[in-house]
Length: 340
Image (cartoon, rainbow, N blue to C red; front, side):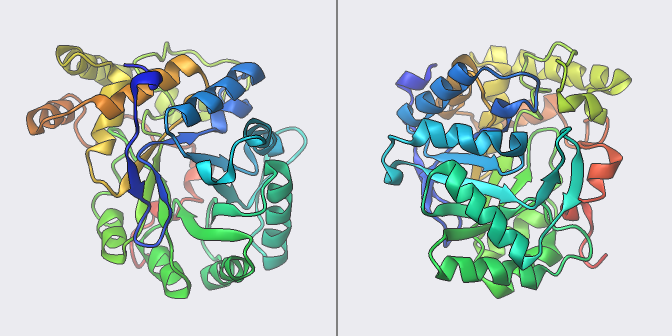
């Protein structure tokens, strides 16, 4: 199954969002987050995604301290603006050494970040703009109100959220229409199912699911090592006994996938896509061969029995280790229970 043979379906992103491709492209890995990336291959992969009918491209202004936005701007400079949608996360701070410096969500900082993203991406308007995190104590109404003003001014088209829980979702939606929540969702990260997903569906908010392969952990390709600069070196799921336990789940999934004539990655991505038409998987491919494989999941037709077999191979809650290190977990509003 290759991208050239794949025609991606289109879907509405939430009740108020844009029409996008059924799969989106997560571009973070093209800016060194998983070790060195190849610029030529990254540009070729972005073009291949567009050729395959993939219209939604997700980035963050802090990916590579702006490198990712510049790369995407270069790739899209001659592509008609109505042929794609760009989703941008903002608010996270970086230092020259690549370290993290918390979040700045003041109204003036939001406007400043947006101005820079527009320049780097070489566009006049961003399709979906979202705070990367809303840590405890954030004035949610002020943040969303600032974004609402930017919608009125024509600089952004839609407002999204990222990694927030039900209380924050409701507070945000009371200020302005929210098109989608971007959140980690995969066979080994199913935390949204009990509380968050029902509220999103009640409010008509879509899901853009990142980490559908758990940063390569359940791709079928992870060999247990990380390149220099790979941020997975800090992830508990990739460490020691946790990694071995999680890779055992991958081998169980491999048996199910091969019996159905698909790859491990295709089984994992197709499972996410099968959880609802309101869920758009973000494929984090940074090479054309990985993109081709991922897009093959769009052609997989999983039956109820197939889905059950996949979930039996990777049971809910079976993953070993948290999905982020402790310092990053503390900033995840999505991990807090409603009312906490």
